[in-house]
Image 1 (tube, one colour):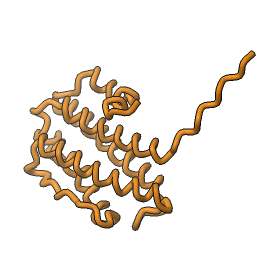
Image 2 (image 1 turned 180 degrees about the horizontal axis):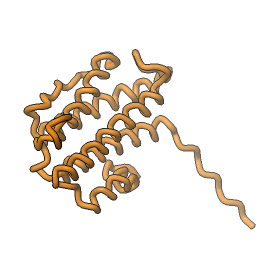
Image 3 (image 1 turned 60 degrees about the horizontal axis):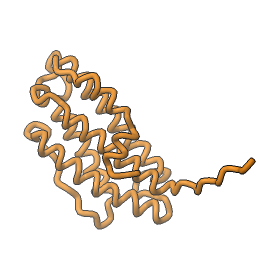
Image 4 (image 1 turned 90 degrees about the vertical axis):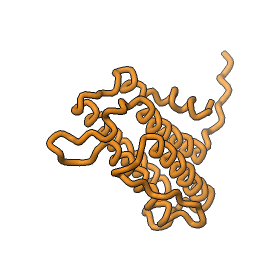
Length: 171
């Protein structure tokens, strides 16, 4: 019986950058499919952030890390959580993702450290994806509470990692 040809190892730096891009694709997917009426609707009881403010927060946290760790990277401006439109949020998130992707790539190509984040760039990747996934969960819950839930297929589609990964152009 012939043995299967061993597959080459996956370059983990490339895999991490692709996973980070897929995470951003999921952010954009939610924005694309969110009911416009939910964007600025006040949270139940008037407490907490609006969906617009949550998306602005995601971008603004990226902005903060780019300022701290960006070393020569062009930092996109912050978003005003009270005025940002969905189109502005989509553009800002795309730009902050691209800038942060450069920081991550440089750290992965270098010594694996990220300025002012310990212990290393892989931990930062985990932190960033977890932070954004947490807020996507808040957004989905808030949209449902506001009477504008994401359609069920979109909710499931957020978890279709391979499809979102392929939408980034990866094969």
